[in-house]
View 1: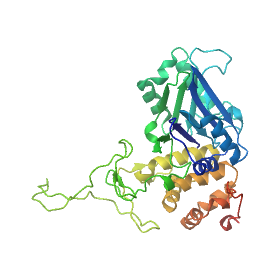
View 2 (view 1 turned 90 degrees about the vertical axis):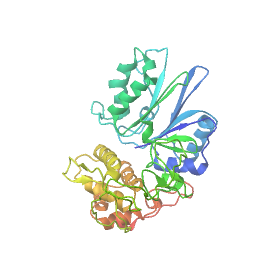
View 3 (view 1 turned 180 degrees about the vertical axis):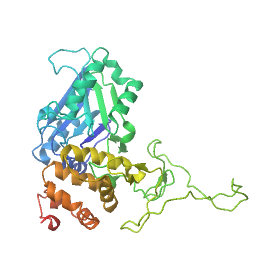
View 4 (view 1 turned 60 degrees about the horizontal axis):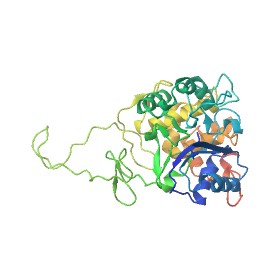
Length: 368
């Protein structure tokens, strides 16, 4: 999992934001930036929230940089597996253009050669180092970004050299917040800070009432779709736009129907996934298979978990499993019924982690 951030020099995060990032990603913090022709990288494993604040003040504040908050899925919790990673120089050889990399996601290439090292560590040595050692400038070529983006799938990379050149691979998978780019919406409280999605017609209405179009520039708006008034291919004017036929789905616990379009087959268990959740289900699957091998969880269960809570909460459940806060049997108990999924969704984070500001922790009755 993890959270990857590309931060301009004039964008700063509050203590509340930093507490949110740290609480969900406690296994390491790293930063990389270029100054005076040198690539600077710093990383640490924070012991508490104060370590996080001190690190931000010393290395991040006022700088154009990339930041990484780690939540372990592969490899040990140590500085070797903290991001950023060097693309060159790990073998002791000097290189005229040093490049470092940060990663968010779970790579299908895995870490079987050395389980103590992360999937990112292996990908650099097996692929990126080989491709870039003779011409490191390729890392910043749009064609290279496109090829690597397709190869890694639902993952995000940031590469940076000593001149400050930066390449964000699969940038479209992330979101903008306060002028910074964040690599996902599940490893932080995106639902709390981003515009609320209320209705979708190729875009959505925000809590401020404007119509937001995904894929455009931040804050792009478009006119609200209106009913038709002219002739249609079906005949004379009816005054209404013909709605596409939709499959009838069971009501969610909130009472609303979910649109089913372009459904794709789930090769794991032979059932369809609602395309609205397809990307999240596939990424949840890749993370789950990495942290809980030989599990019997179906993709339909993962979709139900999202429907009964939200994607962010589903990722949080996997975070608890990966951190060892939940045992495999406790994790399976949550997924045994939609009732348990809804109960989990209502539990405060303090039932699992102490609050970073108060230090309080409670015992969850669901898991007793």
